[in-house]
Image 1 (cartoon, one colour):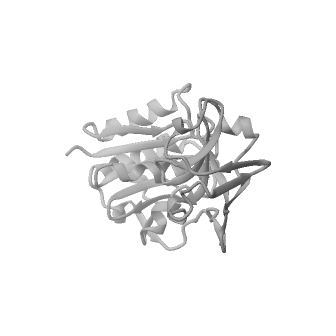
Image 2 (image 1 turned 90 degrees about the horizontal axis):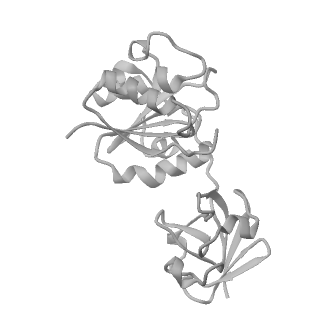
Image 3 (image 1 turned 90 degrees about the vertical axis):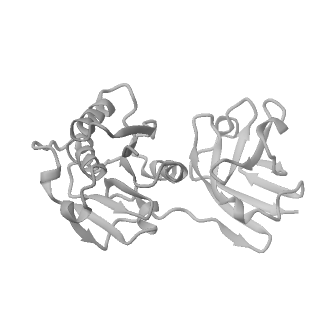
Length: 259
């Protein structure tokens, strides 16, 4: 099977950055398959990138190289790292964006061997000069031990966790997708006994009763909640934008009660 490299960035598609990175990869590994996960991460939004990778990585073949470039510290002393897990290798800046992979692996390497970078390094485009070539070399089978040194102190992103108290669960909105759906940090595993009409959710001044199984169970313009494809509790507005309708943003809290 051809090696696979995925790309997740906050570069968008208006500028040539993504295309340049692909060119660097293909020069070093011409047979590799490059798959875009997303380039629509909000600028510098490390948490959003981490969550996007969490939702997507499990659907790729074993030994895929996942390259993530959301790097507000580019050019600083922050380290370029690679994380080896049982199923994949993750490459990116040591700023917390690879927290998911780090928590499942003890094999984290700082990429220090400049032999595996481009010859001339800029201070503003390490996606091109460091991460893209390093990912290509990894996809070619280069051991991480040749590319750098093992480290034990990578940066871990402190993800917000839901809180449980008797019959109440308190969580928060951790990301908002392009449809305006509000995605919470409450996993479906916390809700097995609340998937009835007796469940109520409070977010801001809005109270939502019951848990839907699909969007069309609500009328157009009506707000509801369900378990989404990420396995998270999501608040939606049928044929609308829940974030705008409820005037909500990332970080706002919500409370679930069993009436």
